Length: 88
Image 1 (tube, rainbow, N blue to C red):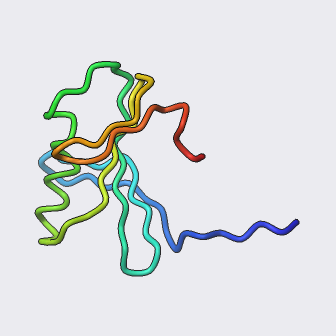
Image 2 (tube, one colour):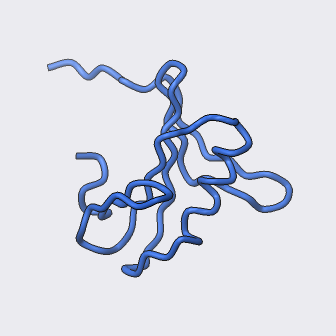
């Protein structure tokens, strides 16, 4: 079985003011944004780095918060994914 990399590029982003995105996965023109948090409690401010980056690019992006809880959810600011499900 051969392995085929399905992503063109992966990186993190941080600006001089401290705004950051933990993981940006780019496949062609599409960018998927990920923020990783150990918390089990989801608060809207956990999405602030993802939302800031999205606004800089002036286009809607796929945003996912990976957290320490057990439930996948869809929230106003993006998707929520348990860390155990990340990469599956």
